[in-house]
Length: 424
Ligand code: GLU
Image (cartoon, rainbow, N blue to C red; front, top):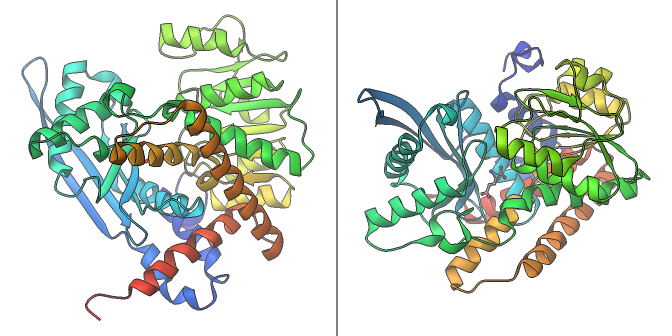
């Protein structure tokens, strides 16, 4: 790999970030490192063409993907992203992070991810439905409740999951609720799923904050992204006495030294689709987000946000990665040198896939749990996983990211080794 492609000046691709993270863990894996190359190669990659008849009668073509990165520990699991910047490189990285994430919290899944290069906000509801249904038919040859189970990600939601479930079921001739998670509750969805990722970020954040003597009460919090994850994590920190002083989305950066009123901002966003123009905070420059005085930083948008340069100026004590892949490896090094703790994505945002797992189990059993039971079980999984990774990082004297990768890679490569290579 070209050294230059590792720098964070807009050149590092998501996949090369992932490869560097794998390079960093290899020396900790002993004899299992013999199998590490398995994680450098996605198992199965599907690129599909999606022709779409637009409302005005014209035909447009969109490119879609489904990548199954590793299936050693179980069926593939991972979301579907609709975003104008989706490409194969990104989907490969996102699928690999799912492999690591599922193993780090010990869910019986491999890792997968899908996506379409499209701006969903520029399509009508009918166009979005036709696009989703054709994409589902195209990837239908590799997904299934025992093969690979999609879920929501950036730009998709429970409505899109309902169309996926219906299309897959129509093609098969019977209703298969377990083919996808993140569905509406009345179609086999799980209580607690929508808020699960934000909740997990909060739970793991509190675990680490208490170990590092960081007081949540009055902590100054910065959040990038105010979607499904960012808004819930903001609400939970506000309830716990934290002050969310700055929030950024793709339309605006808002600052209020006294703390932004989250329920008012949620109301504003529901009405206006974004945070732009919210009257109870001051709009500030985009780059000033990173310079704000803060105790806890929560990137909850897209990958590749914390560059080396931004890592040098950030003032926080703790980074909670609500997004997948927000931090470049050279930025990780700067943060470590500056004594800033990073709770890595593969643990921090695993609450979503954990409740997806519960949804899948409930669909299989056709027996549904209460929200209280779901929250209790997912909190326990998150806290246990976090404690395990914390101990590993102390034992190996490494970052929480490397510790999470050690725990995950040992589980994946052990499975790989014991299954062996077919044919021998
Ligand atoms: N897209 C989410 C993630 O990145 C959830 C995946 C899932 O529930 O399968 O973890």
